[in-house]
Amino acid sequence: MAETVVAGLGSDLRGDDAAGLGVARRLRGTLPPSVAVVENRGDPAALVEAWSGAALAIVVDAVSSGAPPGTVHMPVHMPVPMPMRSRPPAGSHGLGPADAVALGRALGRLPGELVVVGIEGGDFTPGAPMTPPVLAAVRRTARGLRERLTRERPGGPRT
Image 1: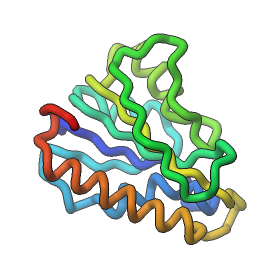
Image 2: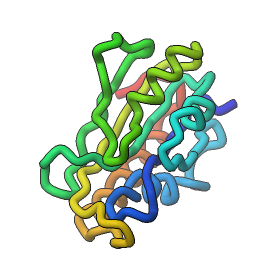
Image 3: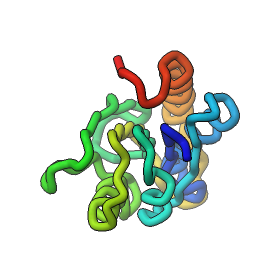
């Protein structure tokens, strides 16, 4: 069982919605063995399964809040269990991290800490490629997570 799980959410079929998947793909094979990297295409049950028993889960997802495309919404640290009214930013698809948190709570399978990173998308058109600002944000986010997760011991103190 991994101490830390990084989950990239999204869909390759809807342009910038692939941002979370892009981060996961850039991280795969570059992190310590105590860190699992998973891709999730919107299945809350699979996300709960991936983070079950982890001390830390980092979820990366495309968001649509009206900010400029490529904006990286700073990580939101959420002690788990979260209050019922606290919800992470919604993903660009119908189901997001909040749905997985609700399911995990109901099943008693939440990580010790949850960090949600949102990458602002601009074009979610079916069949569209990821836009340049979002691709740049994917690269920055993957680089930052790689530095953090190789610098600190997963499950240890966070800065």
